[in-house]
Length: 609
Image (cartoon, rainbow, N blue to C red; front, side, top):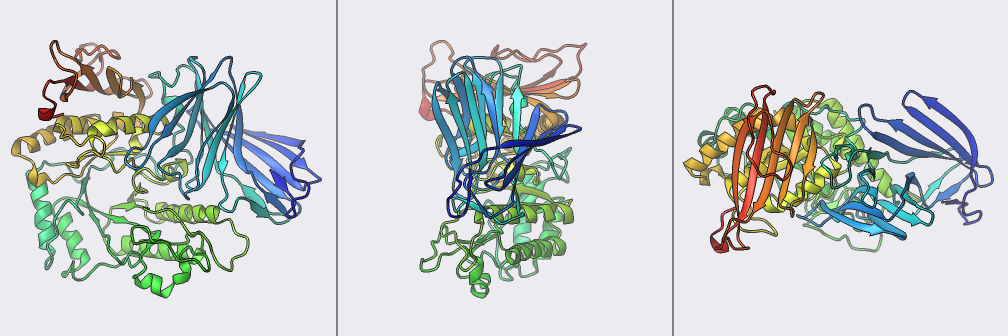
């Protein structure tokens, strides 16, 4: 939707202006001479997938006001009622698969929080009622966004996806071109959103800077799980050594991550009181244990008591005459400013260049509130912040290609394809309890690939299911993606540590299949059987399967779920929902399966699942 700045000539009447085709690409041009706007619709295939990338370019020949600037609009034919599948949630309960039927009318999801947010993921699938085919649309944009579906008379559903300007409109000057975010549009011709053949609906990270790692690192979170001893760095080293010695040999790729959060966010310098022998010595102590070292940082946050805020108060979002609102005792840096971007890039370069850091977790824990830049005039704050964020990530990938980068925003608050394309792994949710994670990971794998899904074994109770769960249940669930350990291994019994060693060894055997295979979802978390099966392309002769099933033994009560877990290796895997063990076939290639079983008990207070 376009108009003159004064509101005249609101609307567009397009005339076809030409087409240009290339190998795997198509551009269609249209113009409206009276308004003074030229539009080019871009289509590009993603090799090896059923995904088409869509984006749009708007070029003004006079000053214009754009109120709606979608990346793509697709028409999906339906013969009956359109069934929409989308991902909803909240903090610690992200990616809940939700469905509704839309016979007529409009349905819209989105976020105005400066990030995709926890409430909805920028992904939508549409199918023709119960038909065995589905079409999806997503948006590669880590800012404000919307996806809108309109069921129209005559048997069509029109779906639009695009970013939403913070100011409500974007102004273009004569000759200026605005390019919208990519909108991946996957399709699944051989299955529905309830089918195991769901992989084509994942718009795999496109234009990815780093290649998926062949062996993703196992992670050990140190910060708030290990008690740091002040006065000498050996204290932390001793704690890590106890973890390392009492646990198992996980190999060189185990990462020890230290988290630093205090009142000086923005002043990213080691605290001499915490590291009296030097931060480099602390890292050396960790690496002496055959561990890599990682850092957890919040580059967009600044504390009001920090030196950075005292020297550059103009660097935070603010509105003249209004007080700055603190969230978690933080303000938010205006990353749309080039000087702020340069500061963040310089800080990361200094840390990664000075210290032997192999892993970087980028976190963001608060949305913008007083989002303004006094004296800047007409600006597109949301787009400028996104551009700055992506510029920093692109620099990280180019300048520090050997550093593993993890994306996070208070859990799963900033997960979309532009971030995924520039990171190695994504923190899916702050909720690590296995029963809660079943539904989180089930929804996540509808839209994204397992090799970017960080999934950890921790001792933390569930937010919605606080009951203790077996170590087997925790490991099997965490092995569905990129396995990490966030538990206090000193509190584990020798038997638990031995069991953990067996699960880690098992994970290493099937890790390449999980990370590089095609994932198929077998049932839902609330169904009698639920699982994930991974087939390694191209011939699918390697396979891994993680499954959970609900059984009610004769005479068992309806409450008190219990979990049992087992693992078998063989050539044939059980069918979906059959509940049988893995059978062995001498003629078939080696495959791997992990089966998780849930059943009921009479004594819920004693259940250990």
